[in-house]
Each structure stands twice: as structure tokens, then as C-alpha cells.
Length: 435
Image 1 (cartoon, rainbow, N blue to C red):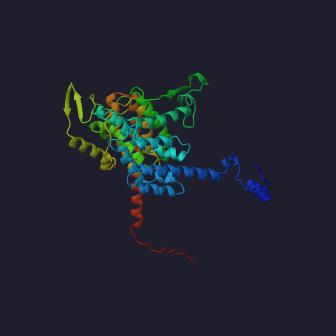
Image 2 (cartoon, rainbow, N blue to C red):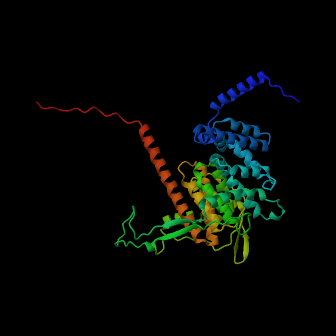
């Protein structure tokens, strides 16, 4: 078959080549240039956040339409993070009896979202970590845990956060420099001449090097959840108030919320101020009952004595009201669980922020105050010296802060009342001048 050359084809091809060459001049710059463009990076981040939020809205009930509307904002992840309605919807889904299984699509969404490189999306997942870990630990340690479905979905999210933290530590432990009082500092000068002996410097290990884990075993559960809470603490200042409230309520429940000696330190210090009961070392004598600890029961001499819930709550309410804490903040979630130091240390650290964070609401501070006292009672029963010292310090700092706030409010009230009190006008002064 003969092929005949068509001159029109040549002209079309030549025009096509000229068009393609002209279009080459208008092609977008290479990826290396767009990566350095902040506008391009911002738009890529917003597009990714919108895609993840729309996929989340598809997993929620009919009310998820309100969640999908948040994707239209300039900062979708931040809008979702600061939305109490969205948090309530997701909390209800995570709290359902069938949640947390390996086929749970919401847990899969949390897992995949945390794998993203976008910091706002990772922050969004971390905001649900108190709720997720609280439900997970409560179900694992509940009395009917054998009849519960698999919790592989919850464990996958916790392992993702744990692996991220382990990677960031690069196999190194978390260390803290313990101050040496024999060396001068900004706050004191030693009496004796300081000796420059570097061998005396002591270093404390907050957390040992993290090992990789592919599954949550019962012996490693505390360190995995505790490490995930360490990751939460790094971003705790950016967390919404409802996330911190959930954490405080779960912490109080983990300790065992029905113990009446949760306000023991408050009552002992009040009695000390009234009667001057101080021991020879000048420290306040702390009374502690050597009893077992459980939800609503105390064991003494091998016998279990049941406490009336109303009487216990009445005592607690009176003590909390003395501190100016609303009774509604006594609501707790979850059940009593084992509290090894690997888990309790990050819990106490987060509660310290909830107590004294300058931007925290009063509800967060009140809930943290209740949780700290519950954990102090638990540590006293468990005879955990590290926890007793840390929680005792938080309780005293909390009482001092509340007392200072009350005094400042009283002074302000008196000053305003004095300013509004009408005063009798002074008579003009008459000066006598001698001639």
C-alpha cells in the first residue's frame, strides 16, 4: 500500500509542534520550585485536610453534614479541632459498645490520619487520645472484659502514636538533670565554697529507651499508653478544653473515685492550721489509712466494709466546695485500673498542666483538682512514694493558688466597693495671710 504525503498534514503537524513549544514556556515550574512556594504548600495542606474531613463526615451519622461544612474553612483541621459539636459526634461514635474493633472504620480513619505528615491533622488525632485511651483501658480492665469484642482498632491507633514517639527519640532515654544544691544558682548561694566536681552531677531517667512493638501485650500495655500520653503532653497547650476535661475525668475514675480519703490531705492541713499539729521535723503529719482500695469498699482486718455512696459523695462535695469546686465536676468516666509508674507519670504531668496552665478554663482546673486528689488517695493506698510526692506537691500548689486567687478577688471587691461609696465633700481650705 502506497502512502501519499499530504501537505496539509505537514502544516498541521508544524502548527502542533509550534503550539507545544509555546505551551512549554507556560508550563508550571518543576516540583522543586513549587515545594519552596509557601502558597503552594498551604494549598496542598488545606486540600489534604479537606479530603480527610470529608471522609470523616461520611463515617458519621446524618449529623455528619455539619462536620463536612467545616471543610470549607481556610483551616479545616483547626475548625474541626475547635468545634464542640464535632467532638461530641466523634466521642459518641468512639464510646459506642461496638467501637474499637479491627473493622472499626473510625479507628481506621484515626490511624490513617495520624500517618499524615500534616501537623494539624496529627494534632486532631491526638485530641481524641484521652478519650480513646480511657475507653480502651476501662474496657480492658472491666469485670466483663472477656465478653467484649476485639479492641484491635484502638490498639492500632495507640501503636501508631507510640511508634511515632519512639522514632522521634531515636533509641535514647528521656533524661532530666537533677539540681545540685552545693552549686550556686539563680535562686540560692551555697554556704560552703562550691566544688567543681562534675562527677557529682546526677541525671534522672524519666523514660527508658523505647523498644519497637508490633502488638499491645498485657505486659507492655502501660508503657505503650504512657508513651502515647507523653506525645499528647507535647501538644497539650493546643488541645481544646473538652479533650482535657475527658482526660481529667478518666484519670479520676482510673484512681477509683469513691474513696473518702481523697480529701485527706486537705483535712489534715486544715486541722494542722487550726491546732498547730506539727511533728519534730516541722513537716505536716500526714495521716493515711492502711486499707485496701476499691470502688466503694475498704478492707480492714480482712473484713470488707461497704460505704454508702451518698455519705462518701457528701463528704467529697463538702471538701470540694471548700475549695470552690463545683459539684458537677465530680462526674467521672471509666473504671479503676492498675496504675504503674510508666502510666502514672505522664498522667500526673498532664494534670499539672491542667491545674496551672494560664489559658485553661476554670472547669478544666476544677476537674484536674478532683483527679489529683483521687490519684493521691490511690497512691497513698498503693504506697507509691514517687506518686505521693508529686501529687502532694500538686495539691499544695493548687490550694495556694486558689487561696491567692480568693485573696486577690476579695481585695478587688473591697477596692471597687470603696470606690463606689459616696464620700462627704471636703470644705475648701481657707488660708490666713498676715499683713
